[in-house]
Length: 249
Ligand SMILES: N[C@@H](CCC(=O)N[C@@H](CS)C(=O)NCC(=O)O)C(=O)O
Image 1: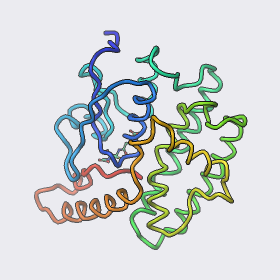
Image 2: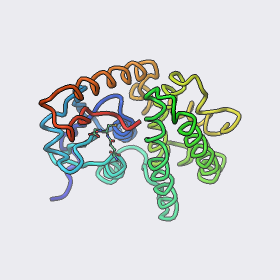
Image 3: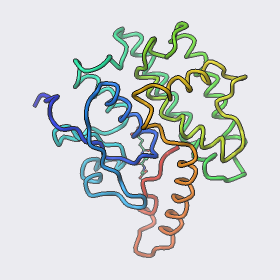
Image 4: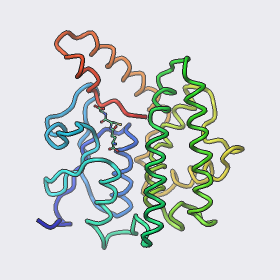
């Protein structure tokens, strides 16, 4: 069955998830109206479990009731399913597409675990995690120089796939900066990325969906409490105790 671009679009997710932010930014960039179905902290809705039975994770995009899972897959789907709406998200050139996908996967391989360590306020491996994030951002600064070619975004004059993939972490970078009292998007070490991050957050498709750092810090605290409560519950099997919609970041 072909996609009907006029079919209703719904996003199942949580406002604090960087992966959910990606989907919202992509839809807003394309000018596609959508309904946001907020998951409750500490629970997973039947709709989420039924729509993403493999990973049981948010986000899920429902387009005409059909689920699409995995944030980067969803962003690519949005680009293809709504070709006439808004600017294209993936670069037109196949080589550029490959480069942008490479760096998006690099960001997802390097950032979430380290950001989670920084958010958890565990002192032990925090220095190592901060170093991992700094090393990844140094690589991404070089990627920005190559991809942007002097223009404001990785994709050029407007935001695109890699901007959305990396930009979705900015809220959690800012939250981790508050929690650790350390600079992550450092204007000295990664000046171009620091300036890009400000431009990205100021983009009209991003403003309003990029979570506020202070709210994320509070969310992190609430999440820790929910996880601790789950760990105490005898009715929750150990293998299910992490199923509280914990953001990877
Ligand atoms: N690779 C996935 C990651 C999604 C993900 O980690 N989602 C988190 C929220 S930020 C989640 O649903 N966690 C719940 C769980 O792990 O059970 C994507 O890009 O969509």
